[in-house]
Amino acid sequence: MPQHLIEPHGGSLVNLLVDQQRAAEMKVLSRDWPSWDLTARQLCDLELLISGGFSPLRGFMCKADYESVCGEMRLSSGILWPMPIVLDVSREAAESLKVGSILALRDFEGTMLAALNVEQIWQPDLNAEAQNVFGTANYEHPGVAYLAASTNPYYIGGTIEAVTPPHHYDFVDLRLTSAQVRQKFASLGWRKVVAFQTRNPMHRAHQELTFRAAANLQANLLIHPVVGVTKPGDVDHYTRVRCYQAVLTHYPKNTAMLSLLPLAMRMGGPREAIWHAIVRKNYGCTHFIVGRDHAGPGSDSSGRPFYGPYDAQELLTKFQDELQIEMVPFKMMVYVEDQDTYAPVDEVGEGVNVKSLSGTELRQRLESGREIPSWFSFPEVIAELRRTYPPRSRHGFTVFFTGLPSSGKSTLANVLITKLMEIGGRPTTLLDGDLVRKHLSSELGFSKEHRDINIRRIGWVALEITKNGGIAVCAPIAPYDSIRKEIRQMIQPRGGFILVHVETPLKVCEERDLKGLYAKARAGVIKEFTGISDPYEEPKDADLTIDTTELSPEECVQIIILHLEKEGYIGTTD
Ligand code: PPS
Image (tube, rainbow, N blue to C red; front, side, top):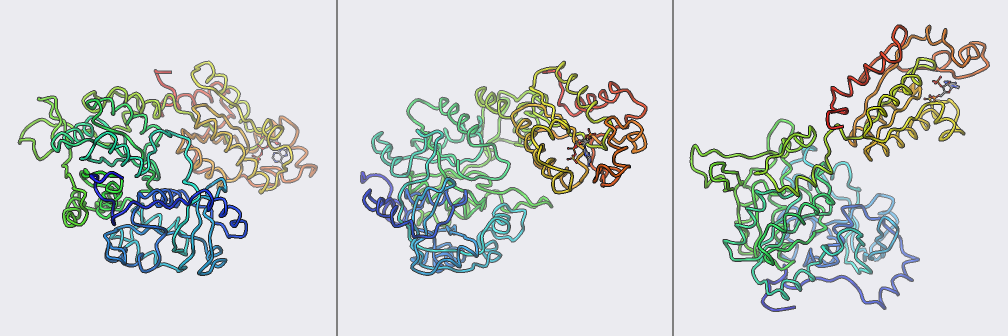
């Protein structure tokens, strides 16, 4: 390793990969070892442990380190370290282990990535951890929510021997380890490098900020976005990386580099900022940009921010000497219209006309297909975001009819499908009750259990169609409220979900008796018949209710079409 690069945290860069011979040996031995399937966060942590991004850590923390990190932000050796890096496992897994056991750590496919020499097993106080690390026990903080809802009750500490790092198939050329980044800096002659951490797409403000930071310091720039686990609801990393690749072309040639960091963020604000700085130091960076509300989770439901906007900068200042990597503090950047330039908000004089666009406003503009101003972002970035977040008129959606047998669901579904195909623009699929029973659910009967399985299958297919931009029109009886709600919750985050209650009264349905089934049900020939000998729970959450008694199918479907238009699913851009 070239001598002129900044020292890794704790003095040397950790590499937990064993040689080939030991790896082969471990594979054979592992047949007798207990296994643990790593969660998404644990996979990220393991990747950075293995490759030295988390130097000086050599495994998942034992209790002394954990408690010292939670309480004092230091490892028990005294080295500054603000974030617990722990392996949480189920009670069942913990009970199958003892000190001295070797635990095989496996990825989603079952591949053994590493082995943990079990040194300690304990039950942590997760509430105390939340208070210490995040300064709150409020579940609205994503880090606290993770501790409360997604963390297993036992922690296992011990050193690691790694067979192979987690495998990635995406953006392979951009996934450099700390050693590889250092190597690259050395070969390019980059001695002074400022790192930029981000979990969001980069726009003009970020480009200006990073460019200024690098230019002021006469340093090179490492754009180092997190592609592990970020805040729920963030833009997916595939889209973001395409945006970063576009932004990279807006720096002077050969001054900036892009590399992806497989970190699982905790949204821990100031503590997390210190952690991020340490990781970047391990990657060979000499400077680290800390902006407004670094790694902050925003505000709680009463509008109170979890951390002050510049708390992270203050905390880093306190530990600056120990950290060695130098913080580059930045205020929020705003667009100064008169000068057609960006500037930190504190450098703008009174009365000067400034502009900014919040993330929420950006999302709304994307949703409705409205213009995104060119002062805000680069055309290539806007184009990428528009591909991922098309306006509602190009979203997929599901129209889910529910109602008694012979209420008119199938007729309306058929007319609706025809009208939607006439409008065009999206692939359209009909999942009628009878059709589904024939092709997807032929083995099922009409017990509650079987009806729920049937609806869940319909919901799954509708979800696949919806999330890929198509239209699913479903027309089962779906008599139970809970399963209808479950389907809505599945589909709504990935597109539109419109529940249409065909509320034609039982009397009318029975008079129609299109298939003669009501007569058979009355005669007791058919059992568990909805409306006669089986329940129908009327929805209270229907987006539309339509009684087909007095209206023609065309009139009923017009109600639906107008609703879709009002909600933006059918628009002028179709
Ligand atoms: S469910 O409850 O949603 O799973 O029912 P679904 O799959 O939509 O039912 C499809 C058609 O099955 C016929 N059928 C019955 N319906 C209700 N109860 C019983 N016991 C029953 N036996 C057969 C009925 O004709 C349903 O079609 P529609 O179009 O609703 O009349």
